[in-house]
Amino acid sequence: MNLKNAEQAVKISQKMITDWNKEHSIGIYLDANNNIKRKELISLGGLDISLAHPRDVIKPALIYGAVGIVLLHNHPSNHLKPSKADLLATKRLVKACEIMGVLLADHIIFCKKSIYYSMRANKKL
Figure 1 (cartoon, rainbow, N blue to C red):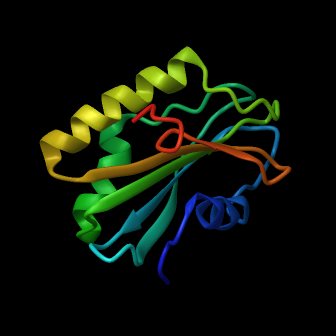
Figure 2 (figure 1 turned 30 degrees about the vertical axis):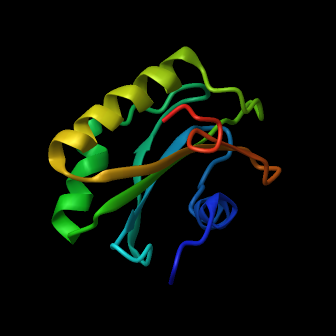
Figure 3 (figure 1 turned 180 degrees about the horizontal axis):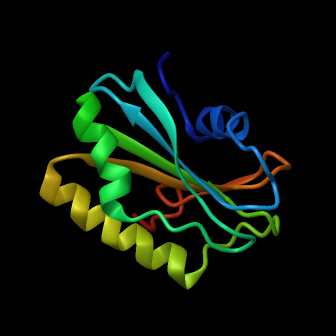
């Protein structure tokens, strides 16, 4: 399956949410043609935090031979604005991905109502 846009990534990820009252970090791993190689839950957090360390995000990309990663996480509060922690985590992940030779294609925050915030579209990557 070819991943075409952020909206499609959100729809895929929404199906993976087991409890909308907790933050879930989800990775979608892509080949060079944006075909999905793998998707998986990276971490499950609390009401307002989901710890996804860069190594936990990048490791599956290395295992499955992915060249790109779309990282997504939900905000149970339904507020899309990225927190300072979200922005810092994205910055750290970009650096780690550069070192490992993997592209962070996007980091997307989404809510149950199918609305989302793309770091790429908002020039935060």
